[in-house]
Amino acid sequence: MTSTIRLQDELGEQLKEHRRAQKMSKSALAIRAGKVREVVARLELGQDTTVSSLLSVLGALGLAIRLEKVGLPSAAEVARRFQEDDDAA
Image 1 (spheres, helix red, strand yellow):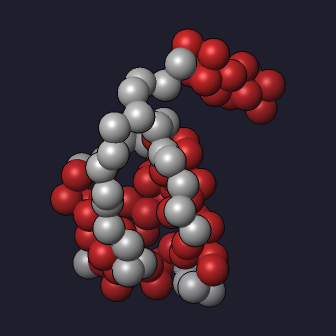
Image 2 (tube, rainbow, N blue to C red; image 1 turned 90 degrees about the vertical axis):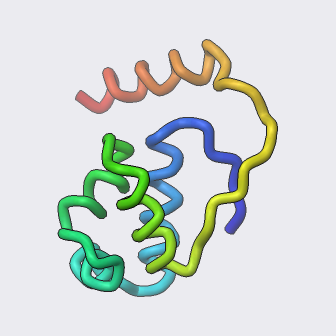
Image 3 (cartoon, rainbow, N blue to C red; image 1 turned 90 degrees about the horizontal axis):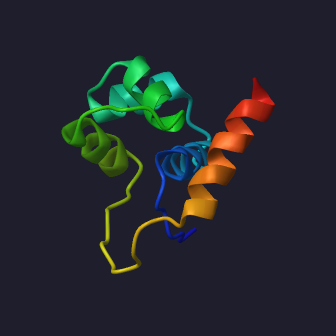
């Protein structure tokens, strides 16, 4: 699975997919990463957490970050996310 991730919720969905593909619970991933379960839950929800926590969880999943130039999310992408949030509420 390789994806271009430009928004926090996209990162969260990718982390969740990788965790599930490895048949791992949030608690098991947290233990492997040396973090509490809440950290994994927050990351999967696209919420703020520390960079060190993100790197620990990525490492526990056998993943790394690769940076590439893509630009900022478009206004339409950001607006779509806000609309999805409103629709879900």
